[in-house]
Amino acid sequence: MRGTRRATLSPAAAEAMPSLAGCPSLRGRIMAWTTGVFALTLAIFAAIGIVEERRMVRDLETSQAAALLGHLAGMPEFQNDQHAAEARLALLQPSMRAAGGLVRLASLADVSGTVPRAGTLARWPLSLAGQPFELRYESDGKRLAALTMRTALIHGAHGVLSIGALLLGLWWILGRNLVAPLREISRAIDRMRAGNGWQFAIPRTDAELSPLVQAVAELGPGLEQQVYQWITAERRAAVATALSSIRRGSAEPMSRLVAAVAESEASAGSAEERTRLSALRADLKLVAEALEREERYHVSEWTRLGRASAHASSKMPADGRDGASASGRF
Image (spheres, rainbow, N blue to C red):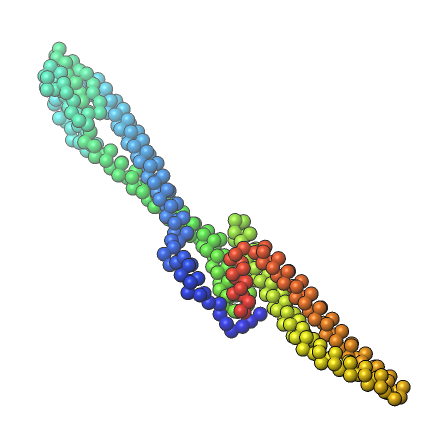
């Protein structure tokens, strides 16, 4: 079926149709939602991982600081008096600072020395010349901050790569198995609406869209069959109407002609003439019967095809009927 007319909507129908210009993209919404949820999940787990790694690093540094203070407390310099211990600590301070720490000797007899400073990781009690002292290991926090920054960068890079891979996978899967089949369906329907016939190549898709694709694949042939039934029914109706008009218009002249032939037959003088007139009257009756028979046949066929088309239309949804009306202009 081909034609030159294109299906157009009436102004009222065009106003009643919702505008699709501002509709959001399904693929964009799916990707935005997935990205947001995945990014939030990664951020939560990354934060938990960073806090746990900070705790582990702090515990390791604390245990190392306690072991160092225990080693220092066992040295002979820390068994005598305060001056010898401070002299020994002065020699060790450059190495300690390079490692990011500081060892201080605090007198517990001094009230100000009893409160440890912030960043103190370990303490070790000492007794120098009968006075209570305490070795304290204080960290400057630079090593912990550097390790935290490195851990955050690693988690951030991992998150960016994971989200990028997720977005690429979603874009490919949705484009191949959702967007491409729907675009092919739209093109096929547009071609049919424009009067270019039904040309639909079944695209490759997943199980969720296979019923829709199969239904659209059967839409064109079904509409063509239905339109063919409608056209045939209209032709039968036109023929039946023409035959009915001819039969009604010729009924009275035909009856007068039959009556005239019957009169001529009754007044005919020869048997041959009567036979000829009788055959003519029989032919006139055959013509009338043929017209009536053809009229009844076309009326019955028109009724049957009309019922079949109505039954097919009742099985289709409203959108399918609208599509069929437009496809009748192929």
